[in-house]
Image 1 (cartoon, rainbow, N blue to C red):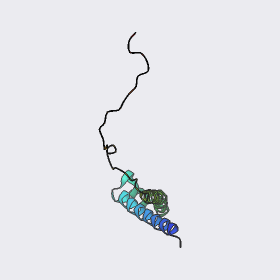
Image 2 (cartoon, rainbow, N blue to C red):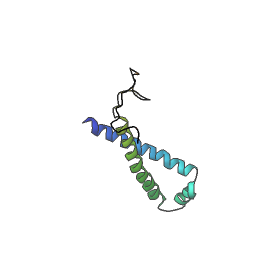
Image 3 (cartoon, rainbow, N blue to C red):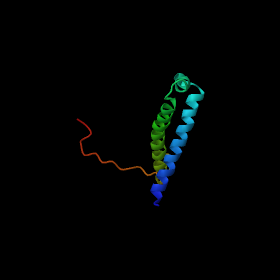
Image 4 (tube, rainbow, N blue to C red):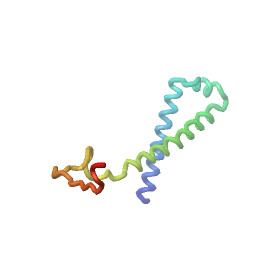
Length: 101
């Protein structure tokens, strides 16, 4: 299996794990009375699966994008400030226009 496909599958799996934790926290804190709505409904399990799946899609995409963008090479050169100046010689400036009126 190519490395990129393996990376995608693992990051998607992590996204769905994060989604499960997120939905668990939503239910634990009863955000927007969600726990009562899910436990009091006859189709609460379907609602719970839909919340987990939809959040899983979002978290999987974010997780994969973060992993891909963190793989970028760091630019070379100085890390901060301007480049190092090795000589401090004054620059010669020529004026072609007349100085007076």
